[in-house]
Amino acid sequence: MNQISTPKEKTATFNYQGNAGAYTLLYFKVIIFSIISFGLYYPWAKVAILKYHYKATSFGDTNFTFHGTGKEVFRGFLKIYFPTLVLYAFLIYASVNKNSWELSIALALLYAFFIFILPFAIHGAVRYRSSKSSWKGIRFSYLGNRTEFFGFS
Image (cartoon, rainbow, N blue to C red; front, side, top):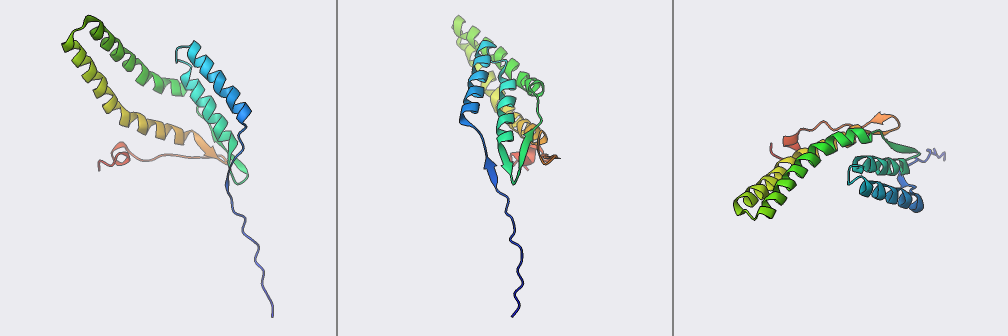
C-alpha cells in the first residue's frame, strides 16, 4: 500500500518580543518629558510607545510597523486639548466667582463637549491608527463611517 505524505502546514502565530527593561526606560523617558512639557509631549510619547509595541509584535516571522508621527498626532491632540483647556478655564473662573449660573453653564458645556466629541475622537483614532499600521508592507485601513461605527444606522 502506498502512502502519500503531505507536508505539514506551517501555522503562523502572533509573538511579542518586547523587553521589560527597554520598555521601562522608554516609559520613564516619555513620562518625564510629558511632565516637563506640561503634557504637550504626549503625542510624541504615544507614537514612541506605539512604535515600540508594533516593532515588538510579529505575525509569523514579520513584525508590524507603525508609520505615524508625533506631529500628526499633535494636530489631533490640539483639537481636543485646546477646547478642553478653554472650557476648564471657564469652569475655574465660574468656581472662583461662586456664580452658580456661570458654573452650571460651564459644566453643561464641558459635559456636552465630551459627549459630542467622544464618538468623533474614537472614530478618528481608529481610522488614523489603522491607516498608519502595516505588516509586510501592506497598509491597513478602516473604511467605516461614524454612523455604522456607533450603530446608529
